[in-house]
Image 1: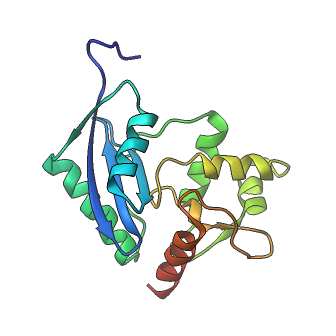
Image 2: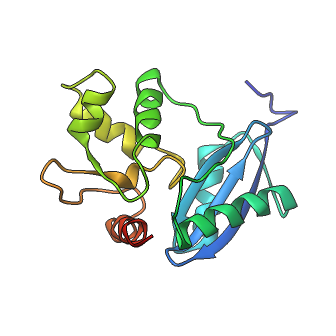
Length: 172
């Protein structure tokens, strides 16, 4: 835990892509947030809310490069995005997020498929909740999870962004 006198620093950068704005934030360990939205200011407020005790630092070249990598992936998603990650969740969430990273670019899996793949076939709703709690858009590809009938369901950053990401991945 960080003290108030010496808060954790989170470096961030905001880029623009076909889906709107993308904010990428990183600690010294790796990327801790990738947020999608329409307004860069709103994304920064969301980041501050998520990491209330952290000091946010913008404009550093290393994080700008990470943001450029995320934007490039959104624009042309040929293969998985390779980023150092600093993501923390419950043990269950982390199992789900690891399973999501195994879904190939251009493919989808149902919530039930993901639940089965982690050895918890009755935990479909919990899988959906873990997807909703995912702080790393595109790096942990929760957009690749669909309903059992193949229909799109909720997406933290908007169903239209989910559709656009899937369409881009299928075309790539």
